[in-house]
Length: 460
Image (cartoon, rainbow, N blue to C red; front, side):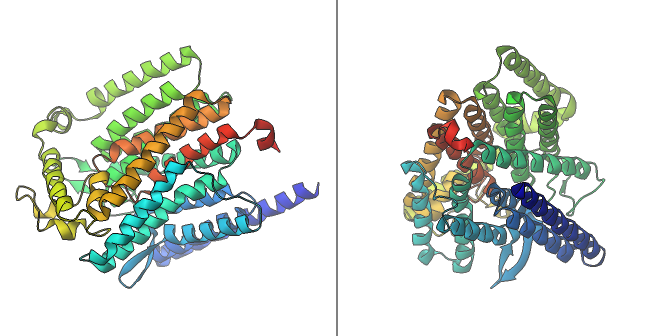
């Protein structure tokens, strides 16, 4: 009885804090929109963090919510570098998690040996800092990379039960669903949180709070793939309908971004979700048929035929695709000259001496995660990221197909599907500091760790 009363008081206090945060945000939005939005969001996430003392998985949920704010999450600048809401929330979450470990309420993560190669990635980035042409930019990029990579270990550390891991994955799906609906509103110029990103050929490409619609599309696609896996495995009708609706909303947002990488990632992620998630054969076949019809409808009805001809069927002659090839060649030359890296965040400073003249000077940003890591952090960072991602894929896939407990297989399949989306997109965009990629890595390894936890022990 006392526990129920304390839980109710905690919930009421949390709701009161959240209500006050929303009211304050709305008040400030009328007077100072950017400051009010950031302050209201910060107070709401601080309340969520406080509640996480009782529900540690909410530390991860708070980090994901802060990361979804993207450009709007830049609270202030220190020494010319932006301090983001994500970094503030993550620092608080990391501090709370370490306090819980010291207090004996949580334990340090039991990660596979190969996953600790991520520390080699950070070591390579740190070792390359002294040679960076832009030292301040390199330091900022190193902090961003560190806060992203360490999220993996926080996820593994707090998502130690199926309930906790499911909560984190469900929160990710619901966040992407909400942002998918905002993407629809932005595409049709009904409402936008940022100035419209509009091109002559594509029209408005939704990005909501993100800087790049392609990166935004990949995050939505990952949420949709996770939603497909969780929805396909859900046996309760209401929850299944919620998950399918959320997945559809996130997928609709992907379409609004017009990102080819996100389209391809969603296709791969959805396929993995259908293949890996435990379900009845009839449901699996129906989902495959529904997916085939959806792809056909997308390219034959939704997308403009001229866009398909230029961006998909004509990709071999598309200038954007060719520029990536030229950038890749420049990356190899940079690595040969600097095998231990040019410094995190220093790709654009270093490429000026190696630029292929066929690439416009305004398009020198890297478009491949692995080449970016190779150039910026050298061979140490490259071995670290590739090795760790291979370990994630192996242990997550093994849990998805071989775990004894059905619930563990479901969660592992969801983490594998969402991670596959971002791994596909990492081939065409730099995602080494993507909080969502590292969240999926942590979720997959956490699911694999649950295969070693007896169901009776978890329930206790």
